[in-house]
Amino acid sequence: MDEPLEASRFRFAGLERSERLSEADFAKCRAVSRKCEAVYRDYLDRRKSGRLPDRFGLSVWWDQLVEHRENTWIRSFLYMNYLRLTHDHSGFLPAVWRRSEDVGNDRPRLQAIFEALRENDEAALREKLHEGRNLGNELRPVLRDYLDHIRTVPDRYRVRVPLIYGEMGLEYDGILVNDMSLTVQSRVNALHAQQILNWIDHASRAKGPVTILEIGAGHGAMAQAFRQFFPGHVRYIIVDLPHVMVSSALYLGRLVGWDGVHVLSEGEKVPRDADVCIVPFHLIEGFRDQIDDVTLAVNTMSFFEMTEPQLRFYAGWLRDLLSPGAGVLYEENCVTSPNHLDVPAVLARYFAHRRDIVDRGRPPFRHGCQRLWYN
Image 1 (cartoon, rainbow, N blue to C red):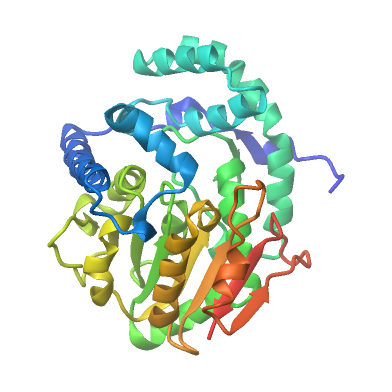
Image 2: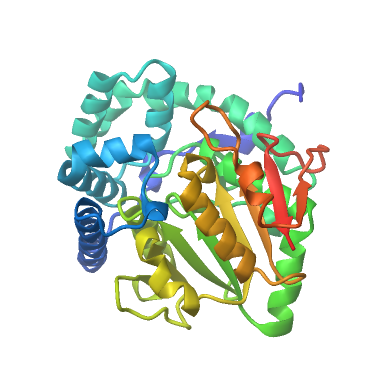
């Protein structure tokens, strides 16, 4: 794509776009985070006392992270999420983390950015991030890639990131564009190319809201995309690590409405009328009989981080959960490290059919490691 970008069509999405939380919302943030912290402490207690089966153990590097950080992890992780939701400019964080990794983990610079965020000091933040216009220039290649991604995608399937929470990037025709939104758009394109989105649309119209299950949801970007595409027609269930799920709980709670997102702990029931349910992975045995009729299961870039017993557990569960002809697993797991698990080799033992999603450019998508599995 060599033609020049039309300057009038995009601009750097300014910091003023962020939205402050009301005292009531901040109180909800605190309540959700405290519940997530309690679930995490329960996981640590079970882990230390040997009450977790092997399939609920973490891979070596995750295990070491929990072993050495424990409560410090809780405080720092919750702090980052509070920051994201309560400070005007914290949406810079995802881009900063990504860029800092590219230049060798410049921790002092990151610390300065955190301090500027904490003090809500816009001038200091802009200085540390090289002025908004320069950051915008760095994102221009992402915008070119984005324009290529939306060429043949119906408008209803264009990912629209909410312009709140300090999200940053380039704004094109009123839509925020950054590396994360492009990644989500790529996954949407892969699903659209295989007619999965149209299938969900038809199923929801025929029988009412469909259930989508995501294992490892990050901060909830895919969940938000599905809610955008099928408003009122999707019930979303997330299974995640207890020290990670706080991110999606806070993000989706603010977007869906605090009463529409349920973080489950031991002994609770899965609400049938909830928009979003978040289940800690080590408690899934207690909830698996309450989760059924799943139309689409999703995993992106985390199956390969698991131990093999854990992945086998999920694969067996999904095989039983996804009825032949009525449910499908979409996964994207690119092997980029010798420590990564061979995901296709494991899943092939549980699913009769594998379909590699090949990028034919209409619409394009990234990575080249997206697959569908079904029986």
